[in-house]
Image (cartoon, rainbow over all chains, first blue to last red; front, side, top):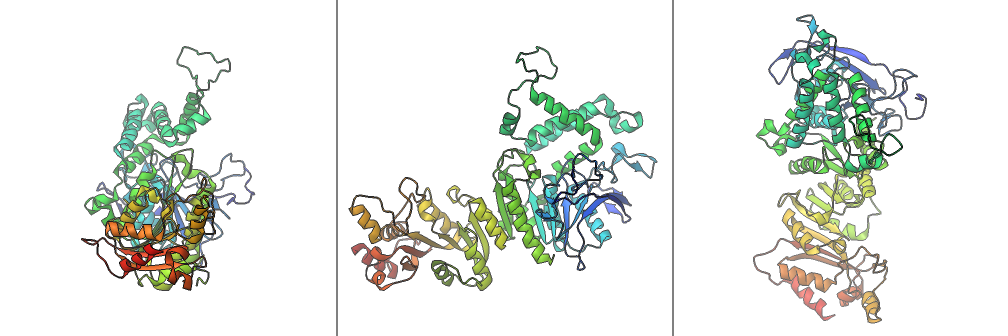
Length: 383
Length: 219
């Protein structure tokens, strides 16, 4: 990884912030304090008006851009969009990215120690919601001295956080950017999540969530969960183009056994395995539940329009034509409700091939719209 | 702010009340909306299908929604806008009549512009047995996006048939001006037609617009 190449934020270091204020969660429980892992890129201006919050999706974390060491093979998860001269331009914005509460990359979550018991939280960690995350992020903003975000940006589950921010803290968000998101997930989406959870819960190594104390991880379950998820992040044509029916052995003969045979099998197993090495099963369970529960209209008599009437932000909604997990039709539901609520909104459906994962790709059409919008945001923010 | 606004768009601006809510169908780079927002405090949205135009409108700070007008305006509630505007797109739609009906469902008034196929150049070309290729209609028949061309007389006949009152009308030449020839023979010399329509009345009725149509029918 060349950290000196144009457009990279270079070598970055995460830091841990302790939020000393109590946080009452949707489930009714209260965390007296919690810790959040945070990375920032770009300078906060004197007026503190150029801060942008980037919210991560299901498997993301605080490391969104740059590298931690010059020897890192891969940069942060959204390095394609964050950096000098990129759509989220770090020459103009102060970008804040955190590992959400309940995450597994250093923030307070199931794989950290519960101070009340001295044991890993594991299954005792409360199930958190998108609303809880937004509350926690607001406490983080207070700690960082950021009164109002120039923009809150996210893709997928991150986009849901951007929408929730605009509804729950209308005065603290100037722009909300919801990319490849949905106003709430469908029965089909909940069904995928349920299979993922069942894969983890039924793994003998899960030990009711206390696997840390048994010195094992429910790797088979987590791997299956990720393999399933991965299929839903890709379009049919993307998989066809990339793997087709290619066999790993070049002689073209079938093996007549259950070993890895088709290229796509090999790919999925690899994706699953590498996920197990970097992610925690309890966090995966919790994140899928947060997705299932997300439904901002619920607090407003199932009326999304009423929910958005609270918002003062301007919105950018982006969808991808090949995304079937969070399809453009779902983004259009957001747009329709925003228009009915007489909010300012722009919407683009990006012509794409890959599927849901396209929100992480540097597609020229995508980055042009995102960059154009954020250039206006920067201008407004005096950045 | 925008001295370069096209004359036909400038004329449309005069038809729009300050502070109105508008929907601009086929808004392109959002020039009209940006101008209206700046000069008249108008709020609203543009619909545009082309990705580059959408990005250009976003860069202007205009609310733009990428959508295909042919798919209808189902995302917009009845009467949610004061005006629905569509410039130079009617003739490229699959069903212009349905689009107009949708415009008048979503908006209190509809403002529409289109090239007049009854212009003498077009008539002359047809008299010679060829499809017109004119300054207003530069593409050949096999590659044109204009699949539903009409004359001003055709358009007004449709308005009468559907009971859409013509509230305003401006017939312009190629330079987007109202010349003396147009005043005499509007159906022959108008190249760009601008109309403001109202919601359908219970029964189609006459009035100044209808008498204007009668004079067109004679040209």
